[in-house]
Image 1 (spheres, rainbow, N blue to C red):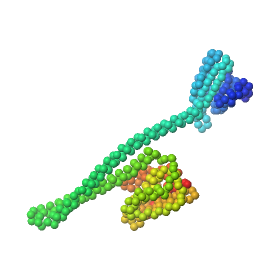
Image 2: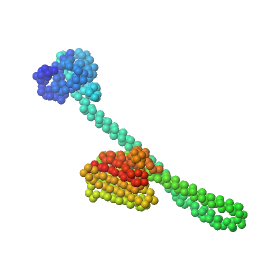
Image 3: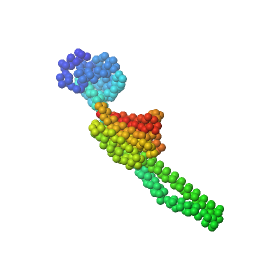
Length: 407
């Protein structure tokens, strides 16, 4: 082949020799008369894969498409276009992979013994087009999923609001129930046993008083059961609404990769303000230790607020209102590598068996828990290139959450 290239340098003009297209001349038998470096580069992988040590173009091009050889051999005119800008797709089994190749080919018979072949590798262009098309399709599919999910979440939200309004009506109905009147009547008849006995007889008077006492007590128990059921349903609705709020964030913005500077001190303060009523009601003392100067991390403020709110809610719910010690300690400190946030509480704590499941999707230790809170926290923190860990000395000894962000 080296002699062919030397000959071609004498025949081909310089601009064809250095052209970005593969250019070669073959005779009617397929023998390569001359070719430029680009043609040599395009044919080299095919030669290597199939071990074709030949100066004949036909055995090489057959690996691209056998019909090319047939069309050249069956062309009987002295001159003319045999193939004009046709795209041929073939697979090249390279070591460890199979590459899909796209060659645009022109074959022009310039004279009976002079056939010009032009090769152009469209593979990079086609690969980029496929990548862009796949990206557009993925984007369209994701958008479609988001729209469907948004509609579903909207419908669920409306249903939950409607359900909540019915529970509110039931609660008000219970509050307006005149249980006190029934209890007062029972008390009055108890005080009038002698008068009733004189009017109705002792047996009938006793039966009437007993019946009324039983009705009052039964009504009280039923009312308390309904009140407790309403409270439990309200808690379930609250958990569902929390889940919906998180999922709406995922649908509208996902776990955003567009990070902006956020100040964790401000997020912590905002979360504590939102939970002030719960902390005050349970008389929980919050201890804050935040370094006056610490790195600002890049992240999604809404998602990070969801994490801290969830962790603080867990600590609040873990602390028994009857406990002597009711404390939540929050510490934020930085070193040369990490920004470390710890939330420690004096709550229920847990054992090693529970610890191994805490971040599993669907696992919860709460009667009305969804099992998504800590799972979502872990997902959000990891999306910020951070780590989260939850430890406890044991049941009844509190727990500590440690979050580390790279600075």
